[in-house]
Length: 396
Image (tube, rainbow, N blue to C red; front, top):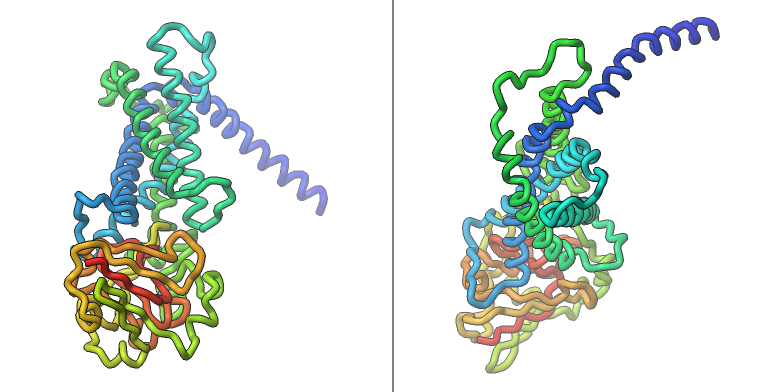
Protein backbone atom coordinates (compact mmCIF):
# COMPACT_ATOMS: atom_id res chain seq x y z
CA UNK A 1 0.00 0.00 0.00
CA UNK A 2 2.86 2.36 0.90
CA UNK A 3 4.56 1.65 -2.42
CA UNK A 4 1.37 2.40 -4.32
CA UNK A 5 1.00 5.73 -2.48
CA UNK A 6 4.60 6.69 -3.26
CA UNK A 7 4.21 5.82 -6.95
CA UNK A 8 0.94 7.77 -7.15
CA UNK A 9 2.51 10.79 -5.45
CA UNK A 10 5.51 10.68 -7.78
CA UNK A 11 3.25 10.50 -10.83
CA UNK A 12 1.13 13.42 -9.63
CA UNK A 13 4.26 15.46 -8.92
CA UNK A 14 5.61 14.59 -12.36
CA UNK A 15 2.42 15.83 -14.00
CA UNK A 16 2.09 18.99 -11.89
CA UNK A 17 5.72 20.13 -12.00
CA UNK A 18 5.59 21.44 -15.61
CA UNK A 19 2.28 23.17 -14.94
CA UNK A 20 3.62 24.78 -11.78
CA UNK A 21 6.72 25.93 -13.64
CA UNK A 22 4.61 27.36 -16.43
CA UNK A 23 2.35 29.10 -13.93
CA UNK A 24 5.38 30.61 -12.19
CA UNK A 25 6.70 31.79 -15.53
CA UNK A 26 3.38 33.31 -16.43
CA UNK A 27 3.21 35.08 -13.08
CA UNK A 28 6.33 37.02 -14.02
CA UNK A 29 5.46 37.28 -17.71
CA UNK A 30 5.54 40.96 -18.70
CA UNK A 31 2.76 40.26 -21.21
CA UNK A 32 0.45 39.33 -18.29
CA UNK A 33 1.72 41.97 -15.87
CA UNK A 34 1.53 44.65 -18.52
CA UNK A 35 0.11 48.19 -18.62
CA UNK A 36 -2.70 46.82 -20.78
CA UNK A 37 -3.70 44.28 -18.11
CA UNK A 38 -3.45 46.90 -15.38
CA UNK A 39 -5.71 49.26 -17.34
CA UNK A 40 -8.33 46.58 -18.09
CA UNK A 41 -8.53 45.54 -14.43
CA UNK A 42 -8.21 49.14 -13.28
CA UNK A 43 -11.18 50.43 -15.24
CA UNK A 44 -13.38 47.67 -13.80
CA UNK A 45 -12.11 48.42 -10.31
CA UNK A 46 -12.57 52.15 -10.86
CA UNK A 47 -16.15 51.60 -12.00
CA UNK A 48 -16.86 49.50 -8.90
CA UNK A 49 -15.37 52.18 -6.64
CA UNK A 50 -17.39 54.96 -8.29
CA UNK A 51 -20.63 52.96 -8.00
CA UNK A 52 -19.84 52.33 -4.33
CA UNK A 53 -19.10 56.01 -3.81
CA UNK A 54 -22.31 57.27 -5.44
CA UNK A 55 -24.57 54.79 -3.65
CA UNK A 56 -22.69 55.32 -0.39
CA UNK A 57 -23.22 59.08 -0.53
CA UNK A 58 -26.93 58.45 -1.11
CA UNK A 59 -27.09 56.17 1.93
CA UNK A 60 -25.23 58.74 4.03
CA UNK A 61 -27.64 61.49 3.00
CA UNK A 62 -30.58 59.34 4.05
CA UNK A 63 -29.07 58.80 7.48
CA UNK A 64 -27.79 62.36 7.88
CA UNK A 65 -30.11 64.41 5.68
CA UNK A 66 -29.35 67.96 4.59
CA UNK A 67 -32.25 70.31 5.38
CA UNK A 68 -32.15 71.91 1.94
CA UNK A 69 -31.97 68.61 0.00
CA UNK A 70 -35.25 66.65 0.03
CA UNK A 71 -34.81 62.91 -0.50
CA UNK A 72 -37.44 60.87 -2.39
CA UNK A 73 -39.70 58.37 -0.62
CA UNK A 74 -40.65 56.68 -3.90
CA UNK A 75 -40.16 54.25 -5.44
CA UNK A 76 -40.56 52.32 -2.20
CA UNK A 77 -37.64 49.98 -3.02
CA UNK A 78 -35.21 52.69 -4.08
CA UNK A 79 -32.90 52.31 -1.09
CA UNK A 80 -33.15 48.54 -1.29
CA UNK A 81 -31.62 48.60 -4.75
CA UNK A 82 -29.08 51.40 -4.22
CA UNK A 83 -27.67 49.74 -1.12
CA UNK A 84 -27.82 46.31 -2.71
CA UNK A 85 -25.80 47.65 -5.65
CA UNK A 86 -23.41 49.31 -3.19
CA UNK A 87 -22.61 46.03 -1.45
CA UNK A 88 -22.54 44.02 -4.70
CA UNK A 89 -20.05 46.46 -6.24
CA UNK A 90 -17.98 46.43 -3.05
CA UNK A 91 -17.90 42.64 -3.05
CA UNK A 92 -16.84 42.53 -6.70
CA UNK A 93 -14.13 45.09 -5.90
CA UNK A 94 -12.30 42.64 -3.61
CA UNK A 95 -10.97 40.25 -6.31
CA UNK A 96 -10.54 43.19 -8.70
CA UNK A 97 -8.40 45.04 -6.16
CA UNK A 98 -6.26 41.98 -5.48
CA UNK A 99 -5.82 41.43 -9.23
CA UNK A 100 -4.88 45.06 -9.76
CA UNK A 101 -2.26 44.90 -7.02
CA UNK A 102 -0.90 41.66 -8.47
CA UNK A 103 -0.40 43.24 -11.88
CA UNK A 104 1.44 46.30 -10.57
CA UNK A 105 3.17 45.27 -7.35
CA UNK A 106 6.68 44.95 -8.86
CA UNK A 107 6.45 48.61 -9.89
CA UNK A 108 5.32 49.63 -6.41
CA UNK A 109 8.84 48.85 -5.18
CA UNK A 110 10.79 50.23 -8.16
CA UNK A 111 14.13 51.93 -7.42
CA UNK A 112 14.89 54.77 -7.16
CA UNK A 113 11.57 55.52 -5.45
CA UNK A 114 11.52 59.16 -6.61
CA UNK A 115 12.71 60.47 -9.97
CA UNK A 116 10.87 63.76 -10.45
CA UNK A 117 8.19 66.03 -9.03
CA UNK A 118 5.57 64.31 -11.17
CA UNK A 119 6.85 60.96 -9.93
CA UNK A 120 6.50 62.12 -6.31
CA UNK A 121 2.87 63.04 -6.98
CA UNK A 122 2.25 59.71 -8.67
CA UNK A 123 3.87 57.67 -5.87
CA UNK A 124 2.04 59.60 -3.15
CA UNK A 125 -1.33 59.15 -4.84
CA UNK A 126 -0.66 55.43 -5.32
CA UNK A 127 0.35 54.99 -1.66
CA UNK A 128 -2.83 56.68 -0.47
CA UNK A 129 -4.99 54.90 -3.02
CA UNK A 130 -3.67 51.44 -2.17
CA UNK A 131 -3.83 51.98 1.58
CA UNK A 132 -7.31 53.50 1.61
CA UNK A 133 -8.65 50.90 -0.84
CA UNK A 134 -7.47 48.03 1.34
CA UNK A 135 -8.93 49.60 4.48
CA UNK A 136 -12.25 50.43 2.78
CA UNK A 137 -12.92 46.96 1.42
CA UNK A 138 -11.73 45.31 4.64
CA UNK A 139 -13.94 47.29 7.03
CA UNK A 140 -16.77 47.10 4.50
CA UNK A 141 -16.64 43.29 4.57
CA UNK A 142 -16.40 43.35 8.37
CA UNK A 143 -19.51 45.52 8.49
CA UNK A 144 -21.43 42.97 6.42
CA UNK A 145 -21.00 40.44 9.22
CA UNK A 146 -21.28 43.11 11.94
CA UNK A 147 -17.78 42.41 13.26
CA UNK A 148 -16.52 45.74 14.56
CA UNK A 149 -13.05 44.80 15.72
CA UNK A 150 -11.65 48.26 14.99
CA UNK A 151 -11.48 51.14 17.52
CA UNK A 152 -13.22 53.76 15.34
CA UNK A 153 -16.82 54.35 14.22
CA UNK A 154 -17.47 52.44 11.03
CA UNK A 155 -19.93 54.70 9.24
CA UNK A 156 -18.11 58.00 9.74
CA UNK A 157 -14.74 56.44 8.89
CA UNK A 158 -16.04 54.57 5.84
CA UNK A 159 -17.65 57.74 4.50
CA UNK A 160 -14.58 59.93 5.09
CA UNK A 161 -12.22 57.42 3.51
CA UNK A 162 -14.50 57.17 0.48
CA UNK A 163 -13.78 60.83 -0.30
CA UNK A 164 -10.04 60.26 0.17
CA UNK A 165 -10.22 57.24 -2.12
CA UNK A 166 -12.03 59.10 -4.88
CA UNK A 167 -9.65 62.05 -4.60
CA UNK A 168 -6.52 59.90 -4.78
CA UNK A 169 -8.08 57.93 -7.64
CA UNK A 170 -8.66 61.16 -9.58
CA UNK A 171 -5.02 62.22 -9.04
CA UNK A 172 -3.77 58.77 -10.06
CA UNK A 173 -5.87 58.80 -13.24
CA UNK A 174 -4.61 62.26 -14.10
CA UNK A 175 -0.98 61.25 -13.68
CA UNK A 176 -1.35 57.97 -15.58
CA UNK A 177 -3.64 59.36 -18.29
CA UNK A 178 -1.04 59.11 -21.10
CA UNK A 179 -0.42 55.43 -20.36
CA UNK A 180 -4.15 54.73 -19.98
CA UNK A 181 -4.95 56.43 -23.29
CA UNK A 182 -2.19 54.52 -25.05
CA UNK A 183 -3.38 51.06 -24.01
CA UNK A 184 -7.11 51.69 -23.45
CA UNK A 185 -8.01 49.71 -26.57
CA UNK A 186 -6.48 46.37 -27.35
CA UNK A 187 -3.70 46.90 -29.92
CA UNK A 188 -3.39 44.82 -33.04
CA UNK A 189 -1.65 41.54 -32.47
CA UNK A 190 -2.55 41.47 -28.79
CA UNK A 191 -3.53 37.83 -28.64
CA UNK A 192 -2.68 35.14 -26.09
CA UNK A 193 0.13 32.97 -27.38
CA UNK A 194 -0.25 29.30 -28.25
CA UNK A 195 3.06 28.17 -26.80
CA UNK A 196 1.46 26.13 -24.03
CA UNK A 197 1.59 28.98 -21.56
CA UNK A 198 -0.38 28.05 -18.43
CA UNK A 199 -1.76 31.58 -17.95
CA UNK A 200 -2.25 34.12 -20.72
CA UNK A 201 -3.35 37.70 -20.26
CA UNK A 202 -6.78 36.76 -21.52
CA UNK A 203 -6.85 33.75 -19.20
CA UNK A 204 -5.84 35.92 -16.25
CA UNK A 205 -8.57 38.47 -16.98
CA UNK A 206 -11.10 35.67 -17.44
CA UNK A 207 -10.09 34.25 -14.08
CA UNK A 208 -10.44 37.63 -12.38
CA UNK A 209 -13.85 38.11 -13.98
CA UNK A 210 -14.93 34.64 -12.85
CA UNK A 211 -13.76 35.36 -9.30
CA UNK A 212 -15.68 38.65 -9.17
CA UNK A 213 -18.79 37.06 -10.68
CA UNK A 214 -18.62 34.16 -8.23
CA UNK A 215 -18.23 36.47 -5.25
CA UNK A 216 -21.32 38.39 -6.38
CA UNK A 217 -23.38 35.32 -7.25
CA UNK A 218 -22.71 33.66 -3.89
CA UNK A 219 -23.62 36.74 -1.81
CA UNK A 220 -26.04 38.93 -3.78
CA UNK A 221 -28.93 36.59 -2.98
CA UNK A 222 -29.36 38.43 0.31
CA UNK A 223 -30.84 41.31 -1.73
CA UNK A 224 -31.67 39.91 -5.19
CA UNK A 225 -34.50 37.35 -5.07
CA UNK A 226 -33.41 35.62 -8.29
CA UNK A 227 -30.03 34.82 -6.72
CA UNK A 228 -31.39 33.76 -3.32
CA UNK A 229 -30.83 30.01 -4.00
CA UNK A 230 -27.11 30.70 -4.56
CA UNK A 231 -26.65 32.70 -1.37
CA UNK A 232 -24.22 30.52 0.58
CA UNK A 233 -21.70 33.11 1.80
CA UNK A 234 -23.74 36.14 2.89
CA UNK A 235 -24.64 36.29 6.60
CA UNK A 236 -28.36 36.91 5.94
CA UNK A 237 -30.76 34.79 3.91
CA UNK A 238 -34.17 35.70 2.60
CA UNK A 239 -36.98 34.05 4.51
CA UNK A 240 -34.78 33.09 7.45
CA UNK A 241 -35.73 34.78 10.71
CA UNK A 242 -38.77 35.42 12.90
CA UNK A 243 -41.91 35.62 10.76
CA UNK A 244 -39.81 34.80 7.70
CA UNK A 245 -37.76 38.02 7.85
CA UNK A 246 -34.09 38.41 8.83
CA UNK A 247 -33.05 40.70 11.67
CA UNK A 248 -29.89 42.51 12.68
CA UNK A 249 -30.56 43.35 16.31
CA UNK A 250 -32.65 41.21 18.62
CA UNK A 251 -34.69 42.42 21.57
CA UNK A 252 -32.18 40.77 23.90
CA UNK A 253 -29.27 42.58 22.25
CA UNK A 254 -31.18 45.86 22.56
CA UNK A 255 -32.00 45.19 26.20
CA UNK A 256 -35.78 45.49 25.77
CA UNK A 257 -37.00 41.95 26.39
CA UNK A 258 -38.94 43.07 29.49
CA UNK A 259 -39.98 46.62 28.62
CA UNK A 260 -41.24 45.64 25.16
CA UNK A 261 -43.80 43.21 26.59
CA UNK A 262 -44.68 45.16 29.74
CA UNK A 263 -48.49 45.42 30.13
CA UNK A 264 -48.28 49.11 30.91
CA UNK A 265 -46.60 50.06 27.60
CA UNK A 266 -47.94 53.16 25.87
CA UNK A 267 -46.85 55.10 22.82
CA UNK A 268 -46.58 58.81 23.56
CA UNK A 269 -47.23 61.26 20.73
CA UNK A 270 -45.95 64.71 21.70
CA UNK A 271 -47.01 67.85 19.85
CA UNK A 272 -46.46 71.58 20.44
CA UNK A 273 -49.91 71.74 22.06
CA UNK A 274 -49.50 68.74 24.37
CA UNK A 275 -49.16 64.96 24.28
CA UNK A 276 -51.31 61.86 24.18
CA UNK A 277 -50.61 58.29 25.21
CA UNK A 278 -51.88 55.40 23.10
CA UNK A 279 -52.18 51.89 24.47
CA UNK A 280 -51.72 48.94 22.14
CA UNK A 281 -55.47 48.34 22.09
CA UNK A 282 -56.08 52.00 21.18
CA UNK A 283 -53.61 51.76 18.32
CA UNK A 284 -55.34 48.63 17.06
CA UNK A 285 -58.69 50.43 17.24
CA UNK A 286 -57.49 53.12 14.82
CA UNK A 287 -57.92 52.58 11.04
CA UNK A 288 -55.41 49.97 9.89
CA UNK A 289 -53.48 50.02 6.62
CA UNK A 290 -51.57 47.18 4.99
CA UNK A 291 -48.55 47.77 2.75
CA UNK A 292 -45.79 45.71 1.16
CA UNK A 293 -42.54 47.45 2.00
CA UNK A 294 -38.93 46.30 2.13
CA UNK A 295 -36.54 46.23 5.03
CA UNK A 296 -33.24 47.30 3.48
CA UNK A 297 -30.18 47.37 5.71
CA UNK A 298 -26.85 49.08 5.24
CA UNK A 299 -25.16 45.67 5.37
CA UNK A 300 -26.71 44.98 1.96
CA UNK A 301 -29.46 42.50 2.78
CA UNK A 302 -33.09 43.29 2.07
CA UNK A 303 -36.48 41.66 1.81
CA UNK A 304 -40.01 42.84 1.20
CA UNK A 305 -42.72 42.00 3.72
CA UNK A 306 -46.38 42.65 4.44
CA UNK A 307 -46.81 45.22 7.19
CA UNK A 308 -50.06 46.30 8.84
CA UNK A 309 -50.62 49.14 11.23
CA UNK A 310 -51.65 52.76 11.65
CA UNK A 311 -50.58 55.30 9.05
CA UNK A 312 -48.36 57.85 10.73
CA UNK A 313 -50.46 60.71 9.38
CA UNK A 314 -53.59 59.13 10.90
CA UNK A 315 -51.87 58.66 14.25
CA UNK A 316 -50.71 62.27 14.30
CA UNK A 317 -54.20 63.43 13.39
CA UNK A 318 -55.62 61.37 16.26
CA UNK A 319 -53.23 63.25 18.56
CA UNK A 320 -54.43 66.59 17.12
CA UNK A 321 -51.05 67.23 15.49
CA UNK A 322 -50.77 69.31 12.34
CA UNK A 323 -49.30 67.77 9.21
CA UNK A 324 -45.55 67.79 9.85
CA UNK A 325 -43.37 70.34 8.08
CA UNK A 326 -40.28 69.61 10.19
CA UNK A 327 -38.54 66.31 10.97
CA UNK A 328 -40.47 63.96 13.24
CA UNK A 329 -38.49 62.41 16.11
CA UNK A 330 -38.81 58.80 17.20
CA UNK A 331 -37.57 57.26 20.43
CA UNK A 332 -37.13 53.56 21.11
CA UNK A 333 -37.36 51.59 24.32
CA UNK A 334 -33.76 50.75 23.52
CA UNK A 335 -31.66 52.95 25.78
CA UNK A 336 -28.32 52.71 24.04
CA UNK A 337 -27.24 52.60 20.44
CA UNK A 338 -26.68 55.04 17.61
CA UNK A 339 -30.26 54.67 16.38
CA UNK A 340 -32.20 54.53 19.64
CA UNK A 341 -33.41 57.98 18.57
CA UNK A 342 -34.00 58.89 14.94
CA UNK A 343 -35.47 61.70 12.89
CA UNK A 344 -37.68 61.35 9.84
CA UNK A 345 -37.84 64.17 7.27
CA UNK A 346 -41.37 65.51 6.75
CA UNK A 347 -41.76 64.13 3.22
CA UNK A 348 -41.45 60.60 4.64
CA UNK A 349 -43.69 61.37 7.62
CA UNK A 350 -46.42 62.61 5.28
CA UNK A 351 -46.16 59.62 2.94
CA UNK A 352 -49.38 57.55 3.15
CA UNK A 353 -47.33 54.33 3.22
CA UNK A 354 -45.38 55.28 6.34
CA UNK A 355 -46.80 53.12 9.13
CA UNK A 356 -46.57 52.57 12.83
CA UNK A 357 -46.59 48.82 12.24
CA UNK A 358 -48.30 46.40 14.63
CA UNK A 359 -48.33 43.28 12.43
CA UNK A 360 -45.93 41.55 10.07
CA UNK A 361 -46.78 38.95 7.43
CA UNK A 362 -50.24 38.34 8.85
CA UNK A 363 -49.27 37.97 12.52
CA UNK A 364 -48.61 40.12 15.55
CA UNK A 365 -45.21 41.79 15.33
CA UNK A 366 -42.50 39.54 16.79
CA UNK A 367 -40.58 41.13 19.64
CA UNK A 368 -37.34 40.91 17.62
CA UNK A 369 -39.05 42.88 14.85
CA UNK A 370 -40.10 45.66 17.19
CA UNK A 371 -43.19 44.58 19.19
CA UNK A 372 -45.31 46.29 20.31
CA UNK A 373 -44.89 48.92 17.55
CA UNK A 374 -42.27 50.04 15.08
CA UNK A 375 -41.84 52.43 12.19
CA UNK A 376 -41.79 51.24 8.59
CA UNK A 377 -41.48 53.81 5.81
CA UNK A 378 -40.76 53.58 2.07
CA UNK A 379 -37.25 54.21 0.79
CA UNK A 380 -35.52 54.38 4.19
CA UNK A 381 -32.52 52.43 5.59
CA UNK A 382 -33.42 49.68 8.03
CA UNK A 383 -31.52 51.36 10.86
CA UNK A 384 -33.89 54.32 10.56
CA UNK A 385 -37.02 52.12 10.87
CA UNK A 386 -37.12 52.47 14.65
CA UNK A 387 -38.22 49.38 16.59
CA UNK A 388 -39.81 49.16 20.05
CA UNK A 389 -41.35 52.63 19.86
CA UNK A 390 -42.10 54.57 23.01
CA UNK A 391 -42.36 58.21 21.85
CA UNK A 392 -43.04 60.22 18.70
CA UNK A 393 -42.44 63.94 18.77
CA UNK A 394 -43.79 66.44 16.26
CA UNK A 395 -42.26 69.92 16.27
CA UNK A 396 -44.70 71.26 13.57
